[in-house]
Amino acid sequence: MPDIRWPHRSREFSVARMKLTLDNPETVAAPFGDRFAHVARLDLDGGALLMLAGQVAVDDEGKVFAPGDAAGQAERIFEIIGGLLAAHGATFADVLHIRTFMTDFGDLTAYGAVRRRLFGGAGTPPPASTTVQVSGLFLEGAVLEVEVTAAAPAASGAAPGR
Image: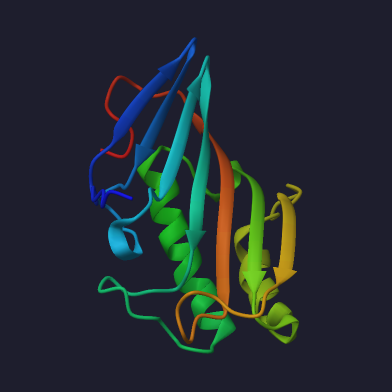
């Protein structure tokens, strides 16, 4: 398999009235190993669908943040997710679905406290959600990985993420 590296570039594809952009916004550190896009953006008439890759709690150098600490990792993960959403004109209010992978359901209370602070306030129902326990994640010390699907406003002529 060829080694494809593109830490801060977008690639665009067009299918009928849809446009797919794979993006790694400069506002967030490049993905671990430069092997995937942080965001797949599908532009449709009137808006876009954002599918964020699974995020783990890492610092800007790719080292695990708060090893073993679910609450600390949740804070960092949602900080990264917030940056990815903002780069595409979206906020946590635009999140449609959250998929969480955790290594221990005993961490659900700590993780849930962070999520409740960010989602479902002011009478707004929280997004759809899936949470599963896994035997491990790809980085030692990581206890959570979170994927998000969100809606975003239509692109305003500028390249998404820029």
